[in-house]
Amino acid sequence: MEKDRLVWTEENRKKVFDCRIFSVWESYCKSPVKGGFHAQDNKNNEPHVFSLIETKNWAIVIPEAETPEGKKFLMVRQWRHGSMCLSLEFPGGVFEPGENPEQAAARELYEETGYRPCKITKLGEFSPNPAIMTNTVYFFLAQDLKGDGIQKLDTDEYVETEFVSADEVMQGMGSAPYVHALMGSALSLYYRFTTNKKLA
Image (cartoon, rainbow, N blue to C red; front, side, top):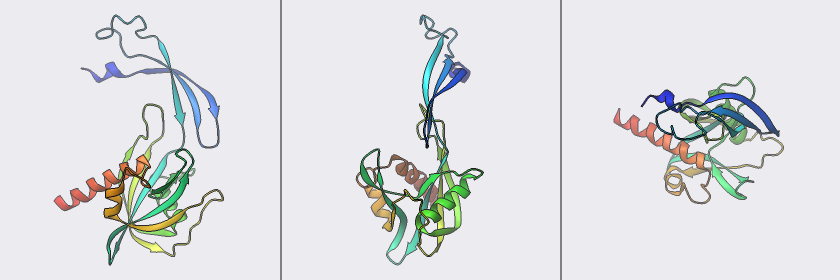
């Protein structure tokens, strides 16, 4: 099957809602089907309307520390208003104007934890929800952490930091307080990276 047969064509886009952190758009698209399967569909190739959420790109960073007790991750605990619960997460946040992904990751790590990485490695990138969201989230591994642990938080940020055993995070992901789905994505990329290093 030719991949082009699955590509929709956007003909217009209209903003229908705007707030501080995202905008909602209506995307007017024509279907890719001009025959073949779905040929009996009366709506074949007619315009359809899809809702899209437009927001800034994000960076998430896994800060790794070697300690006498073994490998640990530097994590942040904060309240999440959507799920109405506390979540234990890797540091991260939205890009600021002009930042590239690595700069955003290093800045968010420093602001939320007070540490900077001597070494930072890109692990991968995902679309958080490609069905409705237009942004990209970038994942990084931060190593050889240096700093004083003094946070530089925004006025509406209430975040506590703690070093957590890597094994505990691996075992706990998917249950409270490890409930943020993107942290699972980060962990999968970290696992691939560390596995590939062992095989190399």
